[in-house]
Amino acid sequence: MATPPQTPRASSDEEILQQQYLRSLSSFEGIILGQIDIKNRLGDRLNYSIQAGTIILGAIAVSILILLLTLSSQISHISAVVSNMNTHFSAVSDRMHEITGYMASMEQRVALLEGIEATAAVMDGEMGDIRADMDGMRGNVDGITRQLSVVRGNVTNISATMDAMTREIHAMAAEMHHMAKPARSMNKMFPFP
Image (cartoon, rainbow, N blue to C red; front, side, top):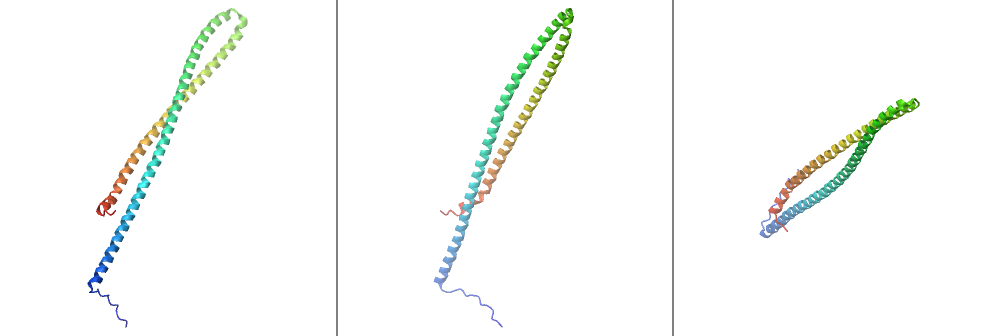
């Protein structure tokens, strides 16, 4: 039968006990310092991550701002072009009314001349075609106006998305501040250089 292992006896020598106590205290201090160092490194990495995230979000915000400014300038340009086209359409419409008056006058004169009636009929057909073309152009202008409304809606959606992103960034900053509180408390408890 094997003898049971004997537990080591504590030395009664005071100097050996003192050395053992100092070794265990220095080991404990080393462990605590190692944990503090690891927490400091993790805190530094967290700060670097926050800074990198802030820079990336700033770059995204600048890109979206540039996109919004570009869209805004394009919308202004398109609005100016459409306004110019409306002015020209108004002038053409006025001319059309004048031409209609001239046509009425010509019809009175053509009634006197039997030989020109066929030509007047052809001109009436051409006027109908011109009116149809004008109606088509008005339809195109209405389509452009609708597209501008859609673009304005998209710009509004982008602004709403930017507001939501700003709120998320503020929430992330508050959460990071909250997460860093235990590390700051640990630094206050163990003020090692």
